[in-house]
Amino acid sequence: MTFIPVRDVTASRVRVTPGETALTADSCDDVAGILKGLADPIRLLLFSHIAAHPNPVCVCDIPDAGVSQPTVSHHLRKLRDTGLVDCERRGTWVYYWATPLGAACVPFLSQLAGDR
Image (cartoon, rainbow, N blue to C red):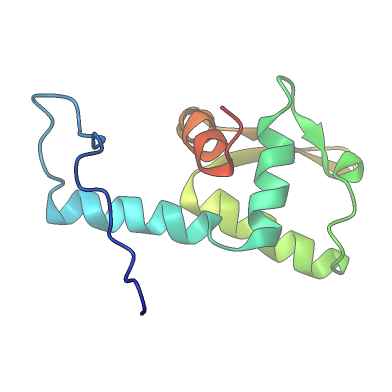
């Protein structure tokens, strides 16, 4: 005899906060762009390293991501384009920091990663 597993439908479900509304089409486009920006593992690694520091991070201090320098530059550009990080050149080095939008994403990313 074969048993079919039954899903527990009595378990409490996580619900949105009362008063929350559905996203608008424009909001969905904005959020999708942010999620696309973080959807690459290399970008997520770079972003998490930058966002973990309270002060701007020199590009020279970003740990090896296992890809070439031009690829790192490409991914950092994508993060800037999504508005998650910003940067400034200081001499020959570029320093990166999380924007307010990027900082607001960190708790959500930590929950997704299971760092509760």
